[in-house]
Structure formats: C-alpha cells, structure tokens
Length: 126
Image (cartoon, rainbow, N blue to C red; front, side, top):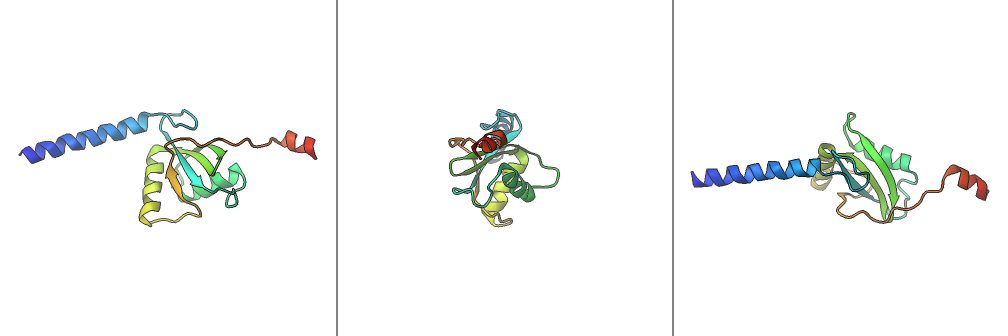
C-alpha cells in the first residue's frame, strides 16, 4: 500500500508539472499553450525563409496543429508550436517513429534572433 501511495503522489506531481509547462508562455512569443522548438539548420539551407520552415515543421504535425510565430535564429529556426503537438513531435523524432530533414528540439534558451530584411529594404538595395 505504501508503494501505491508513493506512485499516486508521483503521478500527481507529473500531472502538475505537465500543467505548469503547458501554462508557461512560449519564450519566443509569450503565448500560453505554445512551446518554442528549434529546428537545427545552421546555414538555413534546408529552409531559407520563414514560410519554408513553417511548411516543413507543419508537415510533421497533425493537420489540426497550429504553428505560431517563426523566427530565423543563429543555428536555424525557432518556431512556436502548440504544447501537446510539440511534445509529441519531439518524442516521435527521438524514438524514430518520424523523421525530419533537421534535428528538432524543445528550446531551453532562445538563440540570437537574426534580422530578416524587409521587401522594401531589399528593393532599396537593388
């Protein structure tokens, strides 16, 4: 009975931890319910634009999943993904149930965000 009690306490702590992680805002956008994931693409050769990064990561998620803010960062791409979909994606990639063109991890610290030149700035240079 002592073991059953200990297991119940640990299980409830795990549920509380999951709830706390879900309620914590994303470090990329500040939105609750989202987690920032990093797609390792140091040269930005796999995805050269935010749209491409969104499309690639979106193709790894269920059709109902939402990808929030996307930012070009040093070392690849930072993307906000709904909490429950992000956790499942990272676990599926780790276990080999799914594959991606780049490594995807949950972001612990946000790398430096790189500026993307706007269309008007690019036209002015040309």
